[in-house]
Every structure is written in structure tokens, then in C-alpha cells.
Length: 96
Image 1 (tube, rainbow, N blue to C red):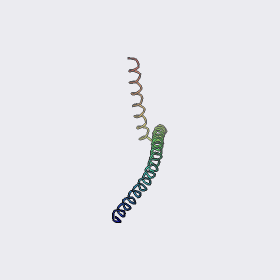
Image 2 (cartoon, one colour; image 1 turned 90 degrees about the vertical axis):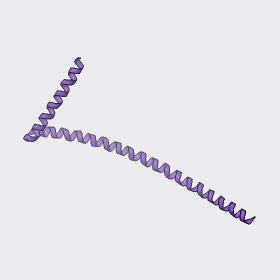
Image 3 (spheres, one colour; image 1 turned 30 degrees about the horizontal axis):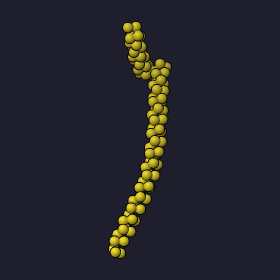
């Protein structure tokens, strides 16, 4: 009889330990999900910042190209020509 009681007690201890581990893992999972959400928001924010800085860099390159350096001026003129052709295509599509 004592052997059965000991096995039941061991089983009870094991179930309690499993329940305790489950609760700890649930809390950790909740914490990690919150952390993931925060990091995803930060990544999104940083991506927008990078995009804005790339636009600003392109504008600076264009402005510098118009200001003087022959190589940069050539690149700036090519970019402006490309933009003008794109605008012309848009106008043509609007006229159709």
C-alpha cells in the first residue's frame, strides 16, 4: 500500500511541477511576444527613417550635382531627364 501511495505522491509532485513550469513558460511567452511587438515597431520606425534619409541623400546628390562637379552634374542631368520622361508618360496617360 505504501508503494502505491509513494507512486501517487511522486505523480502528484510531477503534475505540480509541470503546472508550475507551464505557468512560468506562459509568462515568458507573454513577455517575449510583447518584446517582439516592440522590436517590430522599432524596425518599422527605423525602416521609415532609412527611407527618408535615402530620399534626403538623393536630393543632396542632385543639388550637389547641379552646383558644380562635372561628374555629379552629368548624373543629376540624367536623373532629371529620367524624371521628365516619367512626367511626360504620366501626362500622356492622363490625356488618353
